[in-house]
Length: 458
Ligand SMILES: [Zn+2]
Image (cartoon, rainbow, N blue to C red):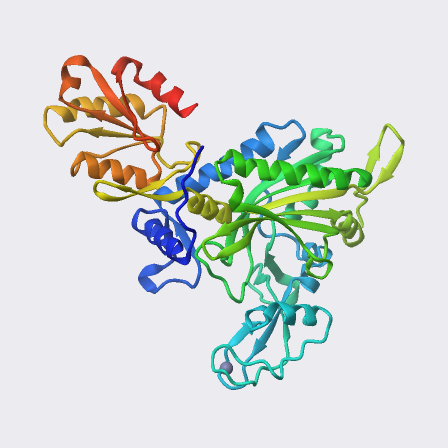
């Protein structure tokens, strides 16, 4: 797929965000109350797009592979899970408060934030000469450790015995089910367990639209393997996951790998490489590939007292498997795919905005459009709509001029439009118009569904 890219700038971010709101992809949550601070609701087109992203991931990661199975674990887990995982102790951000204006900041938001983060990790962050980004005074207090997990209570009593956490990652639901899955499916190493689900992080500074929010959806896969195989599988997964984005039409120059330095890796990772996407606001992590070693299963063995070792019948050995993890945010991936698909091109009416979404991702596959709103055309157009609708997610539109309606479909990424005109009444044929090339071809209504199927590769 060739994509002509308009310059990726903040300006493009504004256009995409406004398109998302105007056309019903993404709305600010609780907007009639002034919004709920960096939380977002997916609208009628957004839920289709995001579902398609998740479906494409599930198909590639579970349904087309015989070495990966899926689960759907609960969000609320036993509180000991988060002690074992290290999140109670380690899942923290350094937070400073200005002694003058009382605003709070994460250290990495201050000027020279990256260097300050490095100093903080080494236990020697000096903020006495750093100015407050809000008021400019040099009165920032000492960094405090702020746990990013949302705390809640199970049952009517709010005491330490009833503490529960909203999960900050879906991975732990997989680790605690490792033995259940392995035994119920009689899997041999290597094999993976995949999951799509909501996670929650009490981010101090969420932002950049749906890129970073406190409630988000993850698509994670943990691949269990022999320790010696982990480095090779790590590289294989890195390549496989990048290919997935290629297959969905993201240009190569919008993707890159970035390896984490030792002092910025999460507490569980021996190696971590991000797949970054060039968002309009810069290169940012979209997906992380991690070698989690045997950290998680080992810790769950310690904390639960259960033996989670794998028994290798071939060698008569018992050992704790290593885990190579691929973790991508469904919201981030959706946003990246929107950015990658957004295009503008000059045409005789000014600018044509096109979402060049992969056909598998487009919310609607087909739009059925009578040439004009006319009592002679409407019945046949409705008939065609009824014919197409059971096969492809479709929409129907008969208001305004046909050119405007094509533009509306281009703007939401609909790959194909089917137009019913006056000759259709006699020749029982309709026109299929393609979004990207705007090429048009006339086909008999009797052949329409197979013709659409062929063009959509469905
Ligand atoms: Zn201040």
